[in-house]
Image (cartoon, rainbow, N blue to C red; front, side):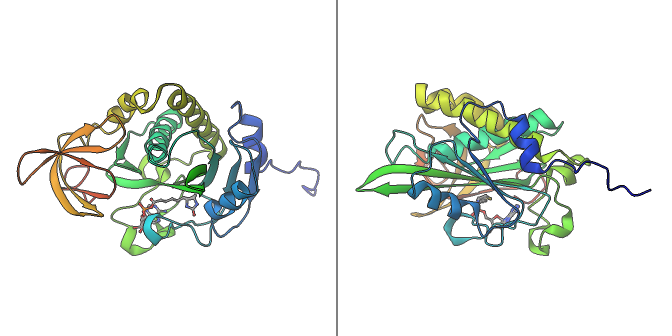
Length: 280
Ligand code: BT5
């Protein structure tokens, strides 16, 4: 007997399209088996006039981008690499709040599809068990000084095995599969993520960042009260995390002088590790 009569299994993109109950996020959906970077492609679509809600997903990236010229390891067939085009009517100073909004949506999606407890590390990482499982890269397109669009890029290590990461990342990167011990359905995870993203985005447009802050602080509870250093553009800042300001800036009590301090950008290192005793 041949098994030629077996119907083909639906692809990731087909299953995702069936699962999506969002109003505009993921509509349309552009899916690639391999691409250099979903953010690069989405930025091109945005420049050509693609509507807000357009999503680009790839099964593999050959040039996945992190922040500040860093790269994002993007092995095929196991993870999520997604870029969402948005056109919020806000200034370029406000748009970076989308990084924080996306981190909350990723954390909620992880809670929905797994029994894991995600933690947000300001501004744009989601960790599980002290290791990074998600990175977020929001890139703005402007014209005549005005924000035209934002490409919100999200990479989530869903089912990656340890061998997918180079040895230098073994201490600080992980996947939902590696921590939880079971493979997750990537389409179901992606549908949950887009649903949470759309919900928080609408809330943000209607009520501003203050409406997102409680959920962010709940998911970042492990960071609040911790001793950290931030490699910020203006230099390294050390202090204790007090919380988030009303616009998404990180609030610290500075170690040197005990004064409150707002931090707008940078890379956080938690003294003693994020999950105590681990590297961050
Ligand atoms: C980020 O940058 O965390 C943003 C990553 C955004 C990736 C998405 S995937 C879809 C979309 N298309 C793109 O091309 N990019 C976006 P950053 O905070 O700079 O962190 C980068 C650092 O994280 C690297 O220098 C490594 O140390 C580490 N890293 C690289 N790949 C990783 C991975 N898969 N998992 C965990 N850590 C990783």
